[in-house]
Length: 72
Image (cartoon, rainbow, N blue to C red; front, side):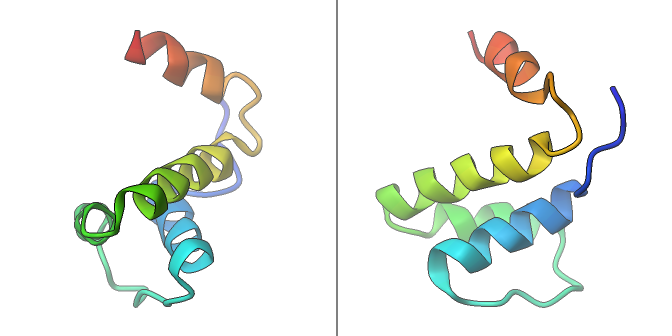
């Protein structure tokens, strides 16, 4: 799969910022971002995940198709 515009960490930070308005430090890990997201209310958590997937799919046209296939 071709490299997309964002890394997992960058996509997570951007999604979290958009949903909460809170900027996470750049030194945060992907696992920590996941924990921050899990602590959000359900609707915000879902929105954060949707945005993360959208950011990860930029530059990777088949990313969402592959993600959907793996989740079935």
